[in-house]
Every structure is written in C-alpha cells, then in structure tokens.
Length: 292
Ligand SMILES: Cc1cc2nc3c(=O)[nH]c(=O)nc-3n(C[C@H](O)[C@H](O)[C@H](O)COP(=O)(O)OP(=O)(O)OC[C@H]3O[C@@H](n4cnc5c(N)ncnc54)[C@H](O)[C@@H]3O)c2cc1C
Image (tube, rainbow, N blue to C red):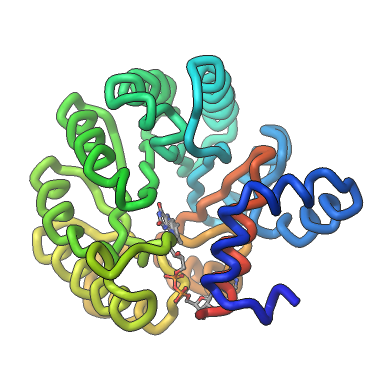
C-alpha cells in the first residue's frame, strides 16, 4: 500500500504526528514499522549505533552519526540532547576511523533563539573526536537564514564544520558563495522538504540541474564538493568532471553503490542516525525510494 502512495502523500504522513502516535500506540504495528525502518537506522540505542558504525568503518566507509530529533521545545529537552551527543562523541573517540557527528540545528534549540542554539552546538564542538567535523543538516527553508548565520559564525570562531546546501532552494548559490568565503566545506543535497515554487526549484529536473550547477560552482572556487545523492547518473557525471569530489549516502540506501565506490577509491561517508525518533525519518526515506 505504501508503495502506491505519491511522494506528496507520503511526505504528509511523514510529518504527521497523528500517524506516528497511532502506530506507536499499537506495539505490534510499531514493531512491524521498526523492522521495515531498521535498514535506515543505526539503532535505537547508542550501543547499537556504535555497532553499526564499527560495521561501516570496517567496510572502508566514513560515517556521520546523528541522534534523531528536531524542533526542541525547552531547556530540559536540550540538556538531554546535548548529553546524548556528548556520550556519542565519547564513544566515537574509542571507535576511531573517519567519523563525524551530525546535528539538526532545531534539535539544538534554533527555534528557541540563535544564541541558545549556538551555545549548545559549541558544547558539542568541544567534545568532537580528534580530526572529526560537525556536519550541520539543512532544514525547512524558513530556518535556512539562521542556519547559514550560525554556520558562518561558528566557522569564524574556528569550529570544524561541514555545511549542507539544498540544491532545490533558489537562494543556495548565494549561500554557497558565503560559505566558501568563510572556508566551510559544502555537502550538497537535492533537498528533502516540500517547498513553495517561489523559494525552491521543483523536485525532479529543476532540483537536479541546480545540484549539478552548484557542484561546479563549489569546485570552481577551489573546494571539493561532497555529493550527498543516490542519483547515480548525476554522481558519476560529477565525479568524472570534478576531481576530488566525495560522496555521502544515507544508511540503507543503495549500499551496493557505496561498496563499489569505495572499491574504486572514491571517499564515501554514510549518514547513520540513531535514537527513538525514527518514524518520520523512515517515512521520508520510503517516499524517496519511489523516486517520485
Ligand atoms: C548524506 C545525505 C545527507 C542529507 N542531508 C540532508 C539535509 O541536511 N537536508 C535535506 O533537506 N536533505 C538532506 N538529504 C536528503 C536529500 O535532500 C534528498 O532528499 C535525498 O537524498 C533523495 O535525493 P537523491 O539525491 O538521493 O535523489 P533521488 O532522485 O531522490 O534518488 C536517486 C535514486 O536513488 C533512489 N533512492 C532514493 N532514496 C531511496 C531509498 N530510500 N531506497 C532506495 N532507493 C532510493 C531513487 O529511487 C532514485 O532512483 C541528504 C541526503 C544525503 C544522501
């Protein structure tokens, strides 16, 4: 049934708290959903996530570990999130390998204020394992101006970061220029959120063409773009044209491609999220698997 729904309908399900609450209230439904979601999820606990990280690094993949969540509502929730990330950072330091942490700014208090978020992100920068970076996710376009300000401010203060730029957003060429001027490495994604036509190119051709143009823009400025896409045609064309470009993929998506890229010597990082809040993330992945 799920496969026959449109991307827009699945997206509506993915962002519906009612659907999530309904599934979670019925233990057999929740178990069934989690068994389908598991391929995209590093685990619900940190121990499970670290086991997944070990499996990935043993296969020659770099990893970006994220603790699920978005839109923190209060300081208690924020304190728990920071504690969770700090525990993850400590565990990653023991694992070794090329492992980053990833954050979603609203999960660290962006909606409670720029300074609140910055303070919490700084607490994670302090505990990053040696050589690691903090990857900053891109969210809905209404949050993009603050996320760009936050990224540039942290980078100027010396934080080792990677920014995410959504190719579908019409503002992104300017954001790319600003990030490059601040020396921030850029990960390009097509953009996961449904946005209106005045702020974003349409899903499909519009976003894909923008992705290609932005990758060239980053490379022409002397920086190596990270191609966060499972679109093999776009990826291969850009890897051929832009020496030094890397690839990022989501855990559980096109794993054969990831293995084949590693065998060819292309650096591949896998985004591996963990925690209890897997439901909506899973629904987004199901929507994207339709390729619609
Ligand atoms: C590492 C990484 C980080 C990202 N970070 C962000 C972010 O911070 N903010 C944001 O808005 N978006 C982010 N995205 C998501 C991105 O914007 C897209 O929504 C998502 O990657 C799908 O686009 P695609 O480029 O893979 O191309 P698509 O055109 O969607 O897919 C290309 C091909 O891959 C297949 N495919 C896609 N998903 C699946 C799946 N789940 N299972 C099986 N096949 C699949 C499709 O069927 C299609 O054939 C990130 C993506 C990656 C890979």
